[in-house]
Image 1 (cartoon, rainbow, N blue to C red):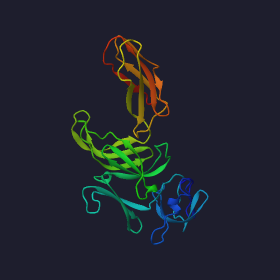
Image 2 (tube, rainbow, N blue to C red):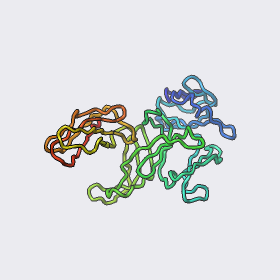
Image 3 (cartoon, helix red, strand yellow):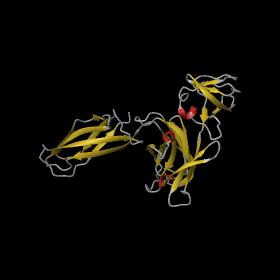
Image 4 (spheres, helix red, strand yellow):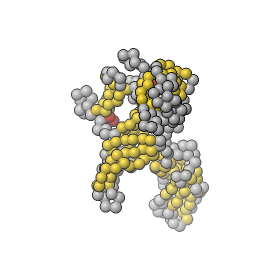
Length: 304
């Protein structure tokens, strides 16, 4: 809620959603209007209300509120029920994501794909981690070592992917994927319920929540050099570019990248360090030394 609500109120301010077609355009097959779940408030009180229209920055209720609520108390609503299934109809070779009317239980459609098979953890959450899209209400689910995001608001004949987030749920043997059984998101925090491996012994101990974040941070750096082979004459050069991306595979700009190399004798990199541009790229030039050798160039990016 964008402002406080008193008991007996007939309108609620919802600045983020009041004119959204999801709220006002949804009507069940039985003609029922969308139901909002308010609370809990500071007294652990909560209730369901039905909307009948909109006013500036808010919604009009069919009745009045039973309890009072503070600004930023939660308002939840649902329109559809989404079910992951390891079968596409009777076909077990692939999975499917089924869509139902959440009020009537009527089957609406399904989306068949192996991406929806063997899913154990999912959640609905508003995500703003992709600059090209802005805030999007997504269905997030765990597949392998990634959290995938679906823009369910644009669901039609196909489901548009909003993006993906790389996770660190790989066992210490660097091969086995640790299964996530529950996914919860609050603010920018992501909580994954999974079996926990002891860092010192490598033994599997107990289930616990592992913490990730929706805030962007540097997750990968890749290097490319062109040309990759140059003469050892102390004058030949190679353009070296470091590509810096976050956990969403989005470019990270305005981060300092420091390059180092092991050319001996001579050789060098300039300029160094270099800030990444809007494409997450930091470019420098390597000048060869006088000895023919394999040169290793390393790049380290600052998180801040």
